[in-house]
Length: 207
Ligand SMILES: [Zn+2]
Ligand SMILES: [Zn+2]
Image 1 (cartoon, rainbow, N blue to C red):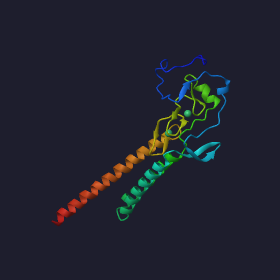
Image 2: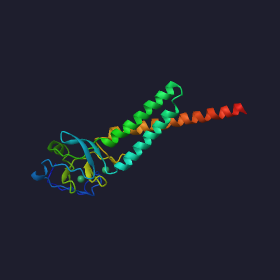
Image 3: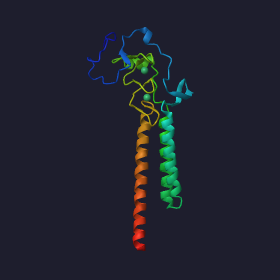
Image 4: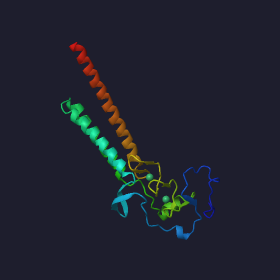
């Protein structure tokens, strides 16, 4: 592989990432050094070994709004089922807490803000792009997010509801959150329908 070769959009038909902020890079020594990391519009909160363990995105008000919504919905269902069968009550409690925590984790952990190390670069140097905004070499699957204004490793999408990007750092947690939400919705919908049926049959008996 010739690293000096410049890649163009037309030549790399299989390279489908959005490269609006990236340009093909002619590798030389000045770009193979690690760069200091910028955080774009994200707000790092807690660092571990120089990398933020907790980081909130530019749409953090939406994240807080959605979290409060889940929290209040879960709290309401728990409150309404205090006098229900213990199995139903504790299932509601566990499913609601799981839902809130899974959402908090996705919204708080680092989605994979790019931090290019030389080893990563060598492994992925077949397709090499340079981000002019972050001033770093993009590894394979790294993409610049226009909302966060920073490069994200293994970029999946920007999710306004979690306030930030979904990428290498939080994609598994994101899928877990989606499954938790589906369980939360289905469980509560079924119980609401059962309650409505019970109420209907009570009214019919009284008539
Ligand atoms: Zn970038
Ligand atoms: Zn983003």
